[in-house]
Length: 220
Image 1 (spheres, rainbow, N blue to C red):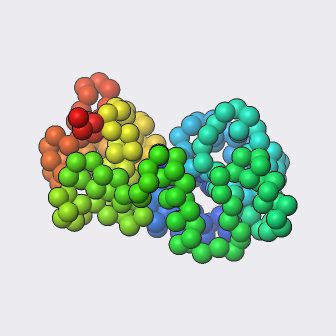
Image 2 (cartoon, one colour):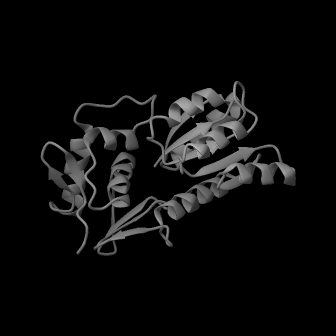
């Protein structure tokens, strides 16, 4: 999953980005409200982590403008503003959840997974598709209840495909899911990861639609 972190404090931002990347997320980080709006215009992120006290444009104003445009991306507010009135204001502006700084990384990750699960309309954290199960919370993949070892980027690519079975995703769309802005995209890496996953999960589990991209077929 690709997250947008909007935080102007360099120490906090670096710590959060590092922790979330270690948890398997792809994280892009911007430091002011205008930069957040520019990033959101690309529609490549699955969730936004938003500080409220931002330079250039306040976080509440960013949130209000986002919702006025009809953008339904989940928003988790991370802020030191702990007054009840501030929480009500943030939630009323369109936030989906609210976490007060300082916070525990395990709680942050749990709240992120809960919001993503709710957005996808799932009750369980794990995504099940036939004999394959993928659990974003534990970064585990199983085939017929047997553990399958996958790399961090293989996991992200598989998660992107399993979130939308039956939908063909292009190579560029898959790259957007597994690479952040500051990460170099190697040539043919998506194809290499697909090849590796097919060896582990079955040759027909991920199919190629020639000239379009890749898809995990729906189960009829």
